Amino acid sequence: MKLLNAQDLATEAAPAAGALLTVANDVDVQTLDLTGVQRIDLAFPKFADGRAFSQAFELRRRLGFAGVIRATGDVLVDQLLQMRRCGFSEAVLRADQDPAVGEKLLQHYSGFYQGDATDLQPRFAKTA
Image (cartoon, rainbow, N blue to C red; front, side, top):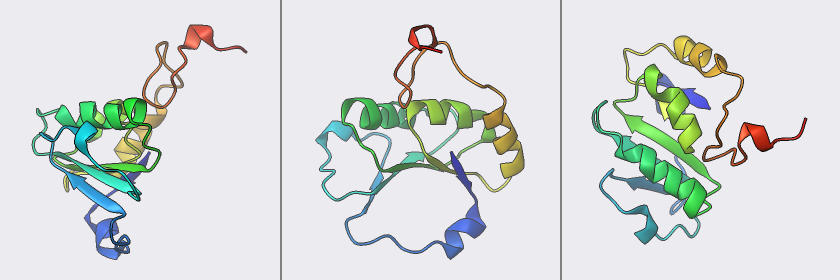
């Protein structure tokens, strides 16, 4: 998972027209036209509002979106592991969050027993 901060966004190149879709967390993602979309920004307006987790999971698992899904808004390092498991590929951290701490947290677990949005097969079903 790629972690970004305000400095990264300032130097980021603008995406091509139609390649970026910014989605509010109350939108039903199944109603979206994803033709030509390369990146979807999902919003976390506050830490306690997790609807974007469900949106990311639906985009990856049910709709098969293979592009970049970016978390924006009130994004804390505490959420990163769950974000990655729900299908997020990037996160723009809140200004007071340390990307180094986020990277360390993402490396803490080597695997999970159950499948998730990007690794569908449960651990018990994997061959050595």
